[in-house]
Amino acid sequence: MALLYVLLGTIFGFILSRSGAADYNYIQAMFLFTNFQLYGIIGTAVAITAPGIWLIKRYGRTALGRPIAIELKPQHRGNIVGGLLFGIGWSMAGMCPGPIFVNIGEGKIYALAALAGALAGAGLFGAVYARVQGLFRLPRLVVGTRDG
Amino acid sequence: MPLILHGLAPIHWAVAGAGIALITLALLFIANRRLGISTGLEDVCSFVLPVPYFTRDAVRSARKWRLPFIAGLVVGGFLSAILGGGWTPTWNLGMFDEAIGFGHAGTLAWMFAGGLFIGFGTRLAGGCTSGHGIFGLSNFERPSLISTISFMAGGILTTQLIYRVIFHLGS
View 1 (cartoon, chains in turn purple, blue):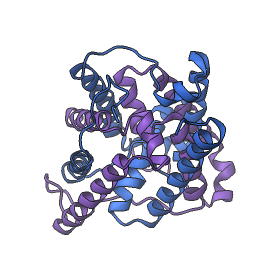
View 2 (cartoon, rainbow over the protein chains, first blue to last red):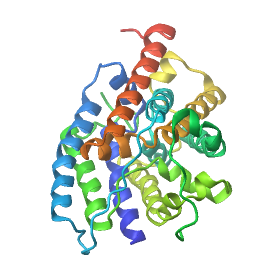
View 3 (cartoon, rainbow over the protein chains, first blue to last red):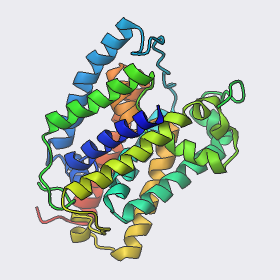
């Protein structure tokens, strides 16, 4: 299966690379409302994925016959505050998480600094989770009931 | 507008959007996985930071697909560069160089700071453009709608501030 994931990631990365989704100028043009490209991409992706998910859920099974199980994301105050913070970072770096890796593959040297920052930021969040849990009404963590 | 990468013309948005949708649906239909990339940052952190947030079940159980998928993203970018004119390390940052031009050290510091916001923000929001913006919206999940509106607002405010207020563009 690992090879399949690498393959899917490769196609995904290639599309991000060639569509402008991993391009600093296109990200800024989206936020400046001077270019439609990325709105078109996200809009088309959602317009096709939504009925696709509906069909797959209706069918109820994966291609290998396992029951479809989608883990839902919790709702809390962090959606708004975290979203705003991520938006600031997306604008500054001109990359969201996927394109960080795509840009590294393309050879854009500065993307390595963005990755280092993203890992440090995620690490910081993990380290302070217990302290900000109440403030943002974050869910309790389920640890150690299942092997990884 | 040409891409920064070799000045290539981008593929049409409808084609790119359809391709992203097909990958997302393939992940769900074949592997029972919801698309999400920023959680992969946790996978990497979980190797070095043994705090409960990173050792929780949701992270540990998904390592075997997230890390290969992320490796694929790097390969995809690499192939795109090779097939588009050759792989060369570059500092080219398009309009950032024209309007801001901090030099190499400044660019790295700027990118690291941006990355901090990305890493902390996506973890606090519980997802990024892929998990909330594409999968979550497509699955009609309210937290994803709230998060997507928030990160679009954060990005729009920041870019407008940077390029229309602080560093003026020609236009």
